[in-house]
Length: 161
Image (tube, rainbow, N blue to C red):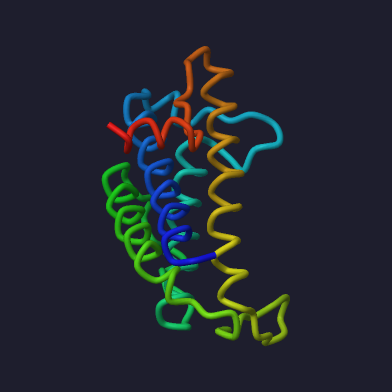
């Protein structure tokens, strides 16, 4: 893939994360705590998981180091999640095209240090968020609310205006 392709992929990724977060900002506190079987957790927990995981992935890509957030960190607000997703999303748009096939970082892989290609981490960024966004959309649907359409076709329609 060339840099333009990666830029489009990660711009869509950022757009999808922020669209979903914006949609969820209109939910009540009770709705944000809704969950269904087979999902990560509540809507709020899953959104926060996406944001914190992306901070970790981006740190690995940009610095080679894990992101250090305290275990006892307070729950993120919707505004804090939006800021974090904007920061990491824009960072990934910048960094993804710079990643070379041979670039790797050391990751604690089930208790064993292992070199992981940064390209695998970039793949995980997209897959991880996509899976969890779909879980949140399923919960929203169960609440009887129309979830946002996050398909790349919708993104294309919006950027093509």
